[in-house]
Image 1 (tube, rainbow, N blue to C red):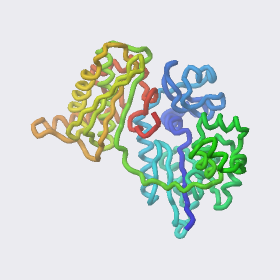
Image 2: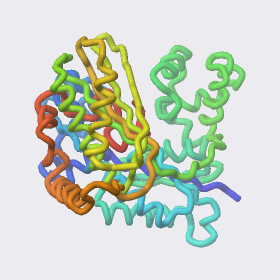
Image 3: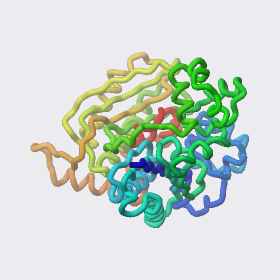
Image 4: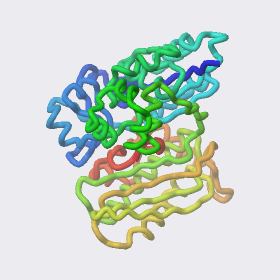
Length: 403
């Protein structure tokens, strides 16, 4: 049986979500990420890319390259809401799929051609995602994950392509070696030093030469340049942790402000838990000092998603952790060991009043934004630090993204 692997990728996902929420951003160069010079670009529109801007670039450099760029702070809660919607659509129609990031999916449709035709099924699924979410999405279909992923990149923006069995080498040959997923800056520079620019050159090289230069990765690189990839689609599993971090515009030693920011971040993650009907039993606090010394401490707690349980635990960990009394560059918090479930109450507390309070706060946040309700101690989070979950770490509920 011929394998049929689909790779789907939401085009400029963060930008697309922001444009759905604010139509004035349509057609404009958009930069999402840290709003100060110390921030980085988490995502950018095609219009901004035309100026040479790319993700992970310092925001200061991006602004210099693209002075007309509109900088958007970003809202991880909105991104996860749309990502979960797309995931639910895929889960409903595909037997085996792998979610590799907030906006990227692999699907194994092997054998489905007997019933629908794999390309037709993938096309209908893509059309359904576009119709229900209004987000642009592209896909590539082939017999392997690597070829499908590269094909998606060639199909963008907002398009689809199928690479037929036996045509993989011809499809890959004219492409730049940069197109290969496993080729990073270091590998690319080594290949350039060897005079290799196109995948066709790797296809024609002896595999032994690739092994001599790159070790065991050399054979894998040679195989994938030839369209050979036996890796399988790993069935999707629910995320096991959520986290957020904040890097400050200016390193600080103000303990009250640090605690206020920690409070705001804890509240936000607790809200994300309740919205996703999740509970946590492990909380971790992270502190990075100005000399980049990074310390973490964690604590196990009964399963909960309640602010009044999580906040004291976070503050307790911070008090134990922050003992150097030197300038702090970053603070972060993570909830792990997640399970599905609703808010758990204590037998001795005022259950009805507490649940009503959380329901009311969450209703306001869902309607007016995550930061519309904050404890007084957390208001400092609005005025210190970037307030940007993309600087230095993944945004809430994106813990599987590269840190």
